[in-house]
Structures are given as C-alpha cells and as structure tokens.
Length: 138
Figure 1: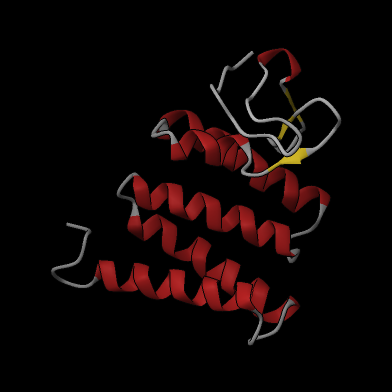
Figure 2: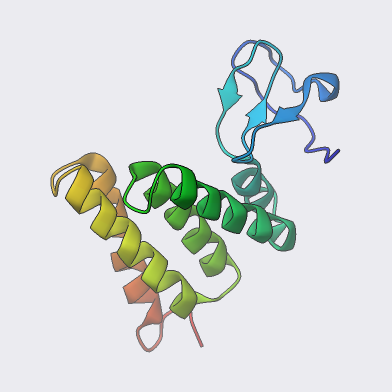
C-alpha cells in the first residue's frame, strides 16, 4: 500500500494510514466513505513525485474516458491534471493538446462563460505564453 503521509480528511485532522483506501480513479478514501480531492496522482504531483504521479493520472484519464465518456467534465479535469503534470516535467508540447481538449469539452458541456471553462482558457493561454521564444520551454 502506498503511504502518502499526513493528509487532511473532511472528518479528521490527520490522515490515518489504517483508514487509507483508494477508489478506481485514485481518490483517497477515509473512514466514513468520504472521497477527498485531489486524486492520488495529483497529490503525488503536488509532493514532487512526478514519476509516480504520471501513470496514475494517465490511468485516471483512461478510466474516466471509458466510464464517463470522452466529453464528460470529469474527463476534462483528468486531461487538465495530466497536462499540468506534463508541464511540471517540462513537456509543454505534450500538454497542449490535452489542455485544448479539456477546453473544448468545457465549452461544449458547461458553456463559454462557466468558471471552469474560463480556468481552462487561462491554463491554455499560460501554456502558449510559456512556449513563446523566451518562455519556459527550451
């Protein structure tokens, strides 16, 4: 079992390793059945373990595409999470189509004025800025 260290659960102040459970999307479950975000892959990314996070985020995306469909808002969230991981790894070109797809899903399902759509638009804009000469990618 993967130990992720202290983690705040909605009904307790500290993560209890004996109560650790993960669902098939990689969400950490605490006693009482609450699903806590972020998913395990995002948590590992936030802790700096990018190599361990990537296969979990790729798997979460594949499952959401299969179970929820390729146009579901949660699929867009997984695309966004994977894109941010790729950006953290310096793979800006690989992140771009994922951010573009997440934006397209959100525009279609949630509409162009929804806050999640605006955030996806901002994420893509920041990536494009970083890809310009003098940006983050070399």
